Figure 1: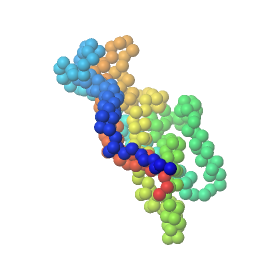
Figure 2 (figure 1 turned 135 degrees about the horizontal axis):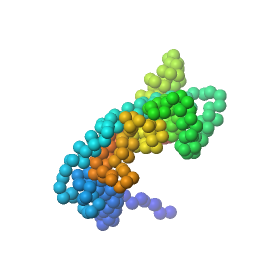
Figure 3 (figure 1 turned 90 degrees about the vertical axis):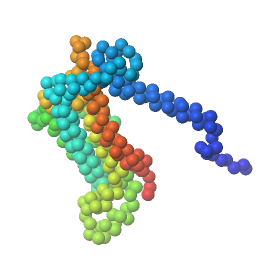
Figure 4 (figure 1 turned 120 degrees about the vertical axis):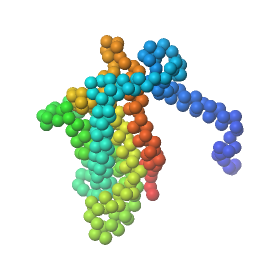
Length: 287
């Protein structure tokens, strides 16, 4: 029987590799073009934005950034602050509550564990809009509407089943001998969670933090439902104020503030991308 050998990248023909790289670069440019167009449009006048497809503006102007930042009744900085507070609190709540719940499912034994875990996974199949009305009625009765509480408090109750499932898979890959050795030394389940599991789970915790921050920062629907006062708006609701149904929208200011809105997400992902890749790649693998 003849041996089967895999083609190594070094033996791959140069022309084939060149074509692959050209195709990948073309796809990258196609995906980046809308972002580059928005960036270029933020330096143009409204009259130039839709009259020319060129990315290079006829004249650079920062007037759109100045107008967008202070052109509304409330400074756009207030919207940034509101989004930052909600996002940071949501990240802390998700990481702490979901990791604690995942630790219970992965490392502790209690009656009905399999049933409750299956029930938790079943909530992943429920669309958000199915539970929207009961949640709104509950928060309305608690007098939480038009506050940050409906957007933050559920995060501290382990309401994101996706993060719980992600952490459970990671925790199950950690050797149980660590728990047994710690229990022999007199550690309680809380100390095992805090002193052993958490320090070893930085990749998956960083993954949950990144996704939680991005999803909360980019969320438009939930703030639209629960926030009524303009002073409590997030950046996504603030961007909506630049769009006028009468056709008098300030497009250059909208694009300028959209660019600024993307920066925190880009910086957050840039600093933690290594942990994100490591957390996704190692989740569920045996160590």
